[in-house]
Image (cartoon, rainbow, N blue to C red):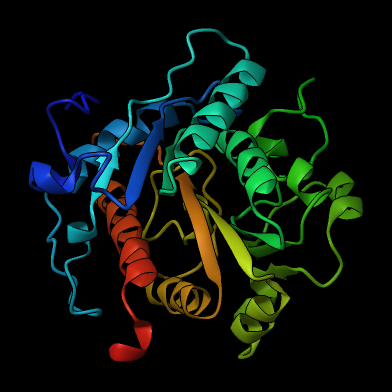
Length: 293
């Protein structure tokens, strides 16, 4: 399936729900993986995501809703023809600003995690009282990695210097990153599984406006194996949804990205999980959660 926004719509929804002027949501794809340091291939993530979306049911049982009717516009993909991650991040930044000025709810599908640097910069210029909810197996707090401050291993460093950064699901990091952790704002997996109050604690630490960045490797690889750096001991599906539903209920989620889907021809369940997660988040954004709890 080609990333041709002119002929295809998200999940094959009717075109009347897929135009920029009518849609509340803009879907921005960034097929970029130059900074990945183990398995490359997440640049193919957006294509696999859109292909899997063709098979999703558009009615969501939990919320009793069809959120696609709020409208989803697929923006032209952000293509970076050079190897410069800095240039790619600038492109993401400018495209994000463009659609924020149109007062749309922005969503992103990567690509590796470096794409988040540009979008967070743009959101930070528009919103006050902003915090970042980072769900990942890794802290991604290195100031520089392999000679670059724009590596996927550095994707949250800049944000950590500017905003409250709440990190969920962490279970792998380098010792150098310890100095950049915001005290009390990190929820390691080995602590989460024995702390019944972790969701409440994490949400309390978030500010009014929240940007969510989700690396697919936050999930346990038993349910999401197709990612660049899988780590054992991750979050389960329903635990993740329970937490995110609470975040959308309590806070003003201003946008989100989902990154590091690395398609595998022999295993497509992670592609579909990513689509289901995306659609769930839109359902939580637009539907009054109190009406179905």
